[in-house]
Every structure is written in C-alpha cells, then in structure tokens.
Image (cartoon, rainbow, N blue to C red; front, top):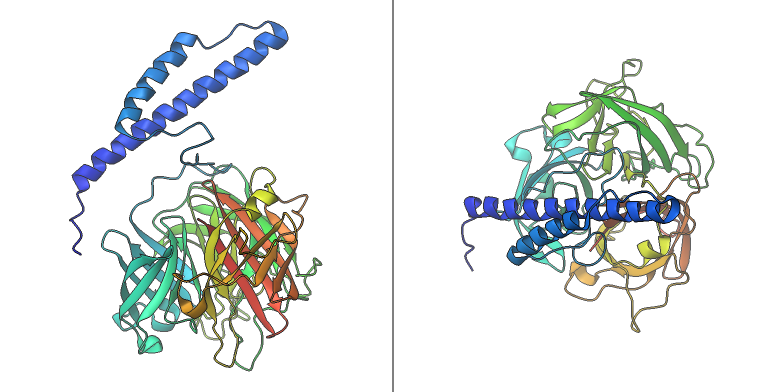
Length: 463
C-alpha cells in the first residue's frame, strides 16, 4: 500500500494548532493554580484573591474553542500525560520525525531513524571510519510495538543479514539491533543539537557491559569494578563541567579501581553529530576520548573509547567506571513511586554480550505482564516478563523473568542499588536506574548472569 506524500504545509498548520492548545492549557493551569493558592491564603490569613473568576472563565472559553478543533487534555490527570520537565532541563522541542543518534557497543555508532520515509541507517564508525563501505541501510514497519527492520545494504560484518529491530522514542533515545539475535544491542542518544542545562543537575548511571575482550577478559567484574553511580553537570556555553562522581560495585562498595573522573567536556558538532567530548591530556599511556550523548528529556549515554584505535597504544578512559560506557537518566526531582513503576507495561531488550555457544545475545523483551495468565509478582516493587520466542513480537512473550527493583536509594531518587532479577527460578543481584522522562518511565538494569557467567542488561521503555 502506497503512502500519501508528507504534506509539510498541512503538518505545520496542525502543529500550530497543537501549540496553541498546549499554550492555552498551560496558561489555564497556571491561572487555576494561582486561584487555588489565593483561596488557601484567604482561608488562612484573609488575603485577597489575586485571580478573578472572570479571568478563569475567559481562558475556559478560549480553551473550549480550541478543544473543538482538537482533543483536549487536562492539567495533570486524564487524557494525554502532561510532560514533566526535569529540573535543570529546558522544555524539549517537539520531536521531529527524522532524528540522528550516537551509540556504543565499545565501538562508536551513528544511526538515523526517519519516520517519514520509514528508513533507518547506521554505521560502526570505529570499525569502518566514515566510509560508505560500512554503511547499513534499511527500511522498517511497526510490529508489536517494535520497529521491524529490513536491511537492504550491509557492511562485511553483517554479511547475509537482512533483519533487525529497534525501539525509538523520537529525538529522545533509542535502542537498535542491526542483524539477528546474535548481534549486539546499540543504545542510542540523540545528536541533533546540544541540550540546554541550567544550574547543576545530577545523573544516575550504570555501566554498559560489552563482550569479552581478546584473551577472554571480561569488560566488567561485578564485585570489584564500578557498576553504578552518580555525577553532576554544570554548563557554560559549550563547556561542560563534571563533578561529584560516585562509583559503587554491584555489592555496593567502592570499586578496587575506580574511574579517573571526567575531564572538562565540550559540546559541538562532529562526525557523530552534536555530542559532548572530553579528551584526556594523559599520554603515558594515551587515554581515549570520552564521547557522551545527552537527550533533551534526561537520557544519558557514554562511550569510554574502549575500542578506540588511535593514537597508538590508547587505553579506555575508565572515566566513570568499567564496561564499554555508561547509560542512565537525569535524577528525578522527587522520589519515584516504585509500585507505579513496577505496574507499568514495557518493551525493550534483554542483552547478554559475550554469551557463547550460539545462544541469543540480544532478544526482544516485554515486562508488565498482568492478569490471570501471568504469575503473580512477589512484591509491589516487582514486574513480570520475559523475551519474545523466535524473535517474534507478535507472539506472547515469556513470563519466566522477574525484576524486583527493591528499595529506592534514600539519597538518590530513581536509583535502585539492591534490585534482584530472577530468571527461571535462579536469582541474581542487580542494580537499576529508573527515569521519568516526559511522563513515561525508562528502566535500565544490570546484573551478572552467574549461570552463563556473562553480564546481563535489560533496557525497557514504558509503552
């Protein structure tokens, strides 16, 4: 079935009406808040109301007119969710249907997802540079909530591969797997612009595990290497300063070899788009440049240069920990309702880099199973789910995996340092970071699969 051409003029008029409606809703909510505050002052100290009934009615009348053109939304309940802008972040611009991203598997990746032409492309620029010989090109349909990718052009490392899957929150964050389930997961951060940050903001993060290095050395030792932590960011123009970096192992103690910290970074455009890069001055040995992507709604991704080839003899930065990088979100301004997090429905990926014997590395997953056909969760902080059989999201997912977030860290909202994952009855300790990004949750979890002796990462977006 042929798609009608995209009508940019019509879309512009539509977006103008959307902006008008949301501006009216925001103004009305502000007026109602002022009225409520004034009423409370009147009840407590006899103060005069600062907002008239006439003013409220005038905004209501405008709102009714705009609602006749489109569906309305409420002031924080019912209808479409209200965007919960994070403290320190500017209000994100409306998402474009075409977005560019940077990602990491140890190698640095670039990707572009075009929802107008339903086209996706990517490139491992660490392995292939920026040559066309390394370019991945494909198209996609939506299947079971995922972008079901058909690859039409692939580089040598993807010879004979024709499939892939992705999840995309346009312009905010994405996850993509180029190839079948034996290929790695690439988490992606947007690179269309430098985000605006005001004041000092705190991020929670986990390390991103990678496949074993040459010689069978793991990229992450859970009992001695950094597993999770926090850091703070302040910016001045294009300069990014990082401070107060905390690091903990999976058991919650200080790592034996903590990261050396992030040097001053700079946000600007390069071959990966708009990213923050932080280059070390160390030359004996030379330390890799850190590449970071910061999404406008609070997503964070870091590549620590673990596969960086130049200069000769370069070593990974280990700036904020082990693995091949870090993934996380801005710290919520208040404690999350963990039961609410656990009660939502999610799609994502179940990722075990380094697993051997032909087992799946990157599998499609679903969590939030509820109803009589699902096992009951062991607690209000737990969610039930599993992977989709045969890489097919149109079939019911398994329900043999339990994620129990446990207790939220008392000093760091959205950080769950003592989470647990249970796979077919076998329990593994885990750590998780949960962000509330534009009124939807993102869950990032890491554990050590002691059955297969590989790291296990689960990344989920609320649906």
